[in-house]
Length: 117
Length: 110
Image 1 (spheres, rainbow over the protein chains, first blue to last red):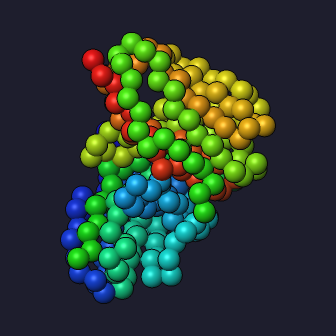
Image 2: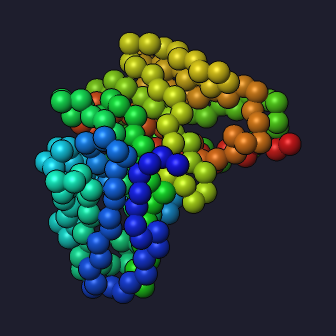
């Protein structure tokens, strides 16, 4: 158990809909990262939050947004869903140094499997 | 934009033998490299890492080698055990950016 909790584990929805994925980081971790894993693809970095502030953005679509709340949990919002958004979405956390560099190891949740039909 | 590539989607080895998983990267700015292991229905877990100032790092049965001139790193598992069967991701990072490869599925046969 990594200590990172993601809910829900599975989500089935239709095209055009909006969903919210939730992540609770390990106790004490200030950084939360979101990754997308599509079939046969590596983990695509989406976005990184540190202590409530956005730190880095990766290949995140404009239809997607995220935030980190004062209690440090994070939500990833996916809207106007398309078939191609079907993927496994991982959240990871770490105790990031003040610089926010990505040199520390990440602790991953077990992911949310999103199926868009 | 595949800056980190794992060209072998799968690898099968016999128990007790050596497993060698390879990873190539294109961005010479990457200065920290990690390997993660992923079992089905679980998230990836950290395995071993190496800084660009080193060319080798060892942790028990796991050794990571880094060849900066070739922009290549490899993970050696000796001896391989059936419990090592999993998907292995290599990752490379610089400052706030961390990129992952597509993963290699390792199967260790008893």
